[in-house]
Image (cartoon, rainbow, N blue to C red):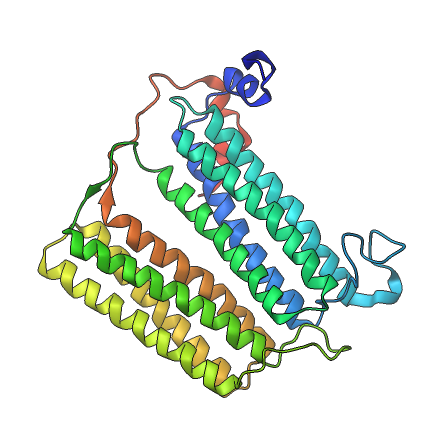
Length: 328
């Protein structure tokens, strides 16, 4: 496509957003990534997984839910519509990253990666409905949403950094310990999907939904074991950083992760000993997002990529941008 015909280039020719605007647009993607996970959980916890019994329409004859479908149809359809809100937020982030000068190709790629993950996960969501809430497809749907959150967080954090080659702030073995922590946390999340798939919240009270044929108590114990592994690695990383007199940033990120893990642990134990009430399960899903965000912040804090290159002059259009006044 000729440069003059590229709509993103046309926007870039007329609007030069500040680094702060790009960061806020990227942060909005993080927020929406969390929202889509939590609202997806709400669909399951309110037994609305088949509130719209088919896909892409809500029924065979209607795009939207009918009055006879009740609140479950409304909840499921609302969750579907949030996908379009998410696409709009990601679109704004892509435009802001593309219009930024000097151009940051990595940020634009991360924005487009989110778009394609959203599109792919929309298809997975449709398959989830068409297969009657198959627990393995439901787990894949959640993990795809977590992948979206991962890319959104990376884009948000990269928007605050420069483009220098990564420089280790700690010795290489310590960075490797950070990656081990990230892998353990990822396995913790995967184990959580197995707990959900074998538990009582099938997503639809009107149908005998297939569950993963594993002992709920045993897979819950496995999930708890991973919690202790992640917690142990977090404590170990903090002691190593302290002994090495590492910069304050990485140490602060590890403390933040420890606090989030402890709070999530409390929620998890309350959930287990109260037989998984819906509200507590929903809070636990929110906590899983916050834990993963905190883990990514720890890993990326162990290296430095220099300072952002500032614009030589701020354009007047930036101050009038809707994102210029948005909260971070």
